[in-house]
Structures are given as C-alpha cells and as structure tokens.
Amino acid sequence: MQIHHNIAGLRAALQGDAPVAFVPTMGNLHDGHLALVTQAREAVGPTGRIVASVFVNRLQFAPHEDFDRYPRTLQRDAELLAGVGCDLVFAPDEATMYPEPQGYKVHPPVELADILEGHFRPGFFIGVCTVVAKLFNIVQPDVAVFGKKDYQQLMVIRRMVDQMALPIRILAGETRRSDTGLALSSRNGYLSDAEKQRALLLSQTLRGLIQAWQGGARDIERLEAAAMLTLRDAGWLPDYMTLRRQHDLGTPRDGEPLVALGAAKLGQTRLIDNLEA
Image 1 (cartoon, rainbow, N blue to C red):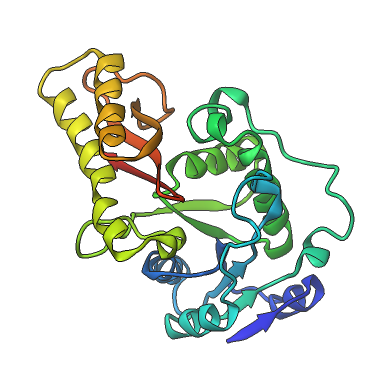
Image 2 (cartoon, rainbow, N blue to C red):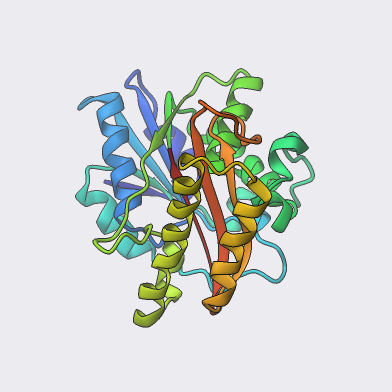
C-alpha cells in the first residue's frame, strides 16, 4: 500500500484505466471505516484501486469544537487500511489542502443543510461539501463510499454530486455497531467505559420514537419532546431527537420510509445516531 502526502504524487499513482473507489475519512479509524473500504473493493473488483483519505478538515469545525484534540493516528490508520486491501492512502497536511485561505466554498441548499446538524453546527455542511468536492477533484474516483451513520451528510453529498453532474457513483455503507449496539464513531474514544454503557440510551430512544409512530402515534412534536426529556432526565444534553422521511428529511407521512435521527452530548462528547424504518 502506498501513502501519499501531496496531490501530484497521488495523481501520478492513479494513472491508468483501472476503476477507482474512494473512501474519505478524518482518520482515527474503526471497523465502520474498514467496512466502507471492503464495500469499495466489492464495487470496483480485484483490479480496481481503492483510495482512502485521512484528513482532519478544519473547515467543518466551529471554533468551540474539538479540532485541536481530534485524534491523529495516521500510522495505526495506515496499518488498518492495508489490512483490508486499501491500495493508496492520501494523507495531506493543511498546507497541501489549503495552500491559501479557501475563499471558494460549496454552499449546499439551506432547506437541507441548515436543519438538524446544520442548525446546531452552523457552516458545518459548507465545510463538508467544500472539502469533499476538493477531494473528488484530486482523486477523481468512479465510486465513493460514505457511511449511513452520518445520514444527513450522506444526503447532502448525494445531492451535490447530482446537481453538479459529477461522474461519481455514491454508495452508502450501513452503520456498524459494537456488540452492545453502540454505533461506532471515532469520538467514542472520548467516552469512559461507564459512558459507553450509558450511550446506548441514544439508540434505544430513537427506537422508541419509531415504535411509537408504528404504534399509531402521530403527534410528532409530542413524540420528539418526550424523547428529548428521556435523555435530559438521564443527564444528557440533547440537540435534537426527530422523526423524518428518509428521502428528503421532511415531515413523515403514513406509508413512507422513516428515519429517526438524534444528536446529544453525554459528558463532554457529542454523539449522533439514526435508525431507519
């Protein structure tokens, strides 16, 4: 497996006709990331090439968020990626990705990007779309794989690719969970063992939202308020707990596929999760 830190070296290594699949990450990898690499291999076959990027993108962090303490574990990440058949790792520094202030940015539509995560993290999806568009231009993949755990992000990226007519097929990877049911996340490393047990309440409460809807409850505001209260009573600081339509994150209606989404802080760690139904 090759590791490249500059754009020219990566592009030279990607010369040829073999299909390319791309898995963008911020590093500190877990089994969920590695499953995306395996999915990428399935998409392009044994002769295709798999590129994974490892880059902590400052543009998607607010000043009060954890950019400086976000774990940087490139050596371990590279070993894990090599173990699942990744061919190339692109690990640029900030000077490579942003040699000058990034004045040109991608602004996704507010009706999708300023709700939920975008409401509580203003500018987050501008940062995500800008770095992903730039990485797409650098790697020029045929296929890119994103995890469903970042459900809204996946939807935003898919819409960007469609509207900008980018020749890239976007694949969704299912959320991977620990044996206890906790959604795998790079930020889980911030949690103590006791907090990891308490963290299960997030997915349990989301499941309760879905079960209430499937049981006939239709007062969305009341259902969401009850879910928020469940977390607050357990010592969490929830941002949102909500039921939405899968295809556009709009208000659900009978007979449409649903997704329950939530974000909340447990101690000093902000966790997100979602469940489809």
